[in-house]
Length: 181
Image (cartoon, rainbow, N blue to C red):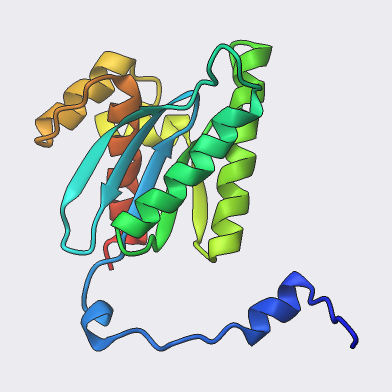
């Protein structure tokens, strides 16, 4: 008996696709916004239009390898997608300069896992520059953390910290730039 290995593209072609239900065609897309890092801020607009947000920490434990943080992150993405009944779009803070080497490496790791997850799940994703997010939220591209927190509080949110506030600001940017349908 011959065993035939399928490439990812061939396997994807064999995967059946179902047309969206008529109910889903009239509902807004589920959008996930992320401020990536060991302490990740997140905001999610669900199909019914509800916005939820928070922070989650992925630091490895004392006796774990650094890769555990990324495994936890991918598992968290899977769980969030299941709870939201799918994610239609991801927007994340695109950081182009970091204060230190470790911060750059951590961000790069989370970004790599996020984009790989999005590609695997066929979810479109977009990075949004930090200055663009701050300008949209506060009117100033170089606004400080407190200004972004204040802007999100003025929109009726209650961010616990700057990571959650940044995720909410990214979500509001995505909604204003085509995510609201």
